[in-house]
Image (cartoon, rainbow, N blue to C red; front, side, top):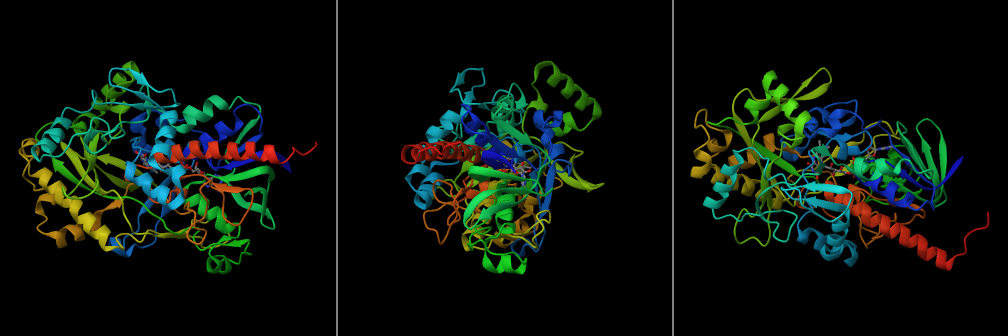
Length: 546
Ligand SMILES: Cc1cc2nc3c(=O)[nH]c(=O)nc-3n(C[C@H](O)[C@H](O)[C@H](O)COP(=O)(O)OP(=O)(O)OC[C@H]3O[C@@H](n4cnc5c(N)ncnc54)[C@H](O)[C@@H]3O)c2cc1C
């Protein structure tokens, strides 16, 4: 069996950061195992490539949820990245730290080291922030770009509408005043995706003490009693870990690996015929995700639909991108929006909104899901309840690590979530009614949003059409209380030694915004904790003789 100090399972947003940090300095032998292939496709680097990637089974896990009673019994597609960089290589690159209050809740669950003041300083180390005129602040590997000078001209109407309603404007949703209408910052460098794979892993791959094995799905964790000793691949190959095995396989992959390895709810493991290594009912539980509802508004002015649907427009955009790394191909589809309160009296923003100068739909053809731009000028207006309280679960169906698990999102299970869904749509209706939006949109045919008469119709519409924005979290949640969580505040799995989970699954609760930035922050903080634990151990335990 090949021996390593640390084995990281999953080269996603979190795993790439851990691999770089743990191999820095050359002290430890680090193995990074990734089920998927490389991230060298140009579609990964070109930001608009997002539209192609998330439906491509060649580089994604195409998971499906079970029928979701809260969403009119619909099943939803939940793509996750299956390549180096993980979902961070296929995502829409909107970069949101989350609101300070989110991390006060993390601190309540997991301890003060996860409070806003602590995590803010970790974000500062993660990022280089680049202003619209190219000035930089910070020197972290992840480049966070202000694109406010490049967004579509129609985005002006978004800010005018917010102004008309007296809503705040935020220059930077990651800054000191995060609430308000804003232009989203994106993690790109010189017009290319700046994922943790590109920014952390790639420069470290030349190190002799870091090994990356691609196309190497992990079957299970190997234990000696309650001590973690290594991992086994689906191919049967085994590796031993002298220090820690760290699961970074994402909010679906990590609880699945734990469960097929005998760590999870007793009944689930028994049903799958697995011997129980450690029973913990929380593994796969507490699942949280963001749901959004989108309304297409036909416009009287050209939008990105007009620029990017015709072949000639695509060729011109490609030329502009090749020449200057600018233009629509260098941007996310999500350009404007912001964190807003649906009612003034609320203590914090309860909605994340999007105003995208493009409208499209997903269509399935030939085994892949394609994004089709609408054949008319249009924009999308979306609301996303920021802090859902419903909790779902993920459970294996069998001991087969390649069989997709059961995903039960349990959407809209709480009264709070149903109220918030309606409150978001009400806010969109108020925005639709502003003279700024009316001036650029057509009345006929009326948008679905205008037609909604009351709260019942709004909730029905949300149930029938809202969809995931691909942010599953919390399925191996962190907490001080062993009876309600999976890992402790140092990301160690309760009840077992030598095993940690570090990825979006360990959020105690979902953050208000998009989940990639908090996942990368969590991984950077976790790497500090792991290295500190090692340094502390060295002070108390002499190094074993060779
Ligand atoms: C389509 C899409 C759009 C998104 N848009 C945004 C956005 O605009 N902004 C934002 O902030 N967030 C966005 N997100 C969410 C964000 O990308 C994720 O929250 C984040 O990437 C999660 O990181 P992670 O490390 O937990 O998991 P991942 O990045 O998914 O990494 C998990 C890795 O583990 C690997 N793996 C899984 N199982 C195994 C196994 N058995 N053996 C070996 N390897 C395994 C996977 O292949 C993958 O590479 C989006 C996500 C998607 C899917």
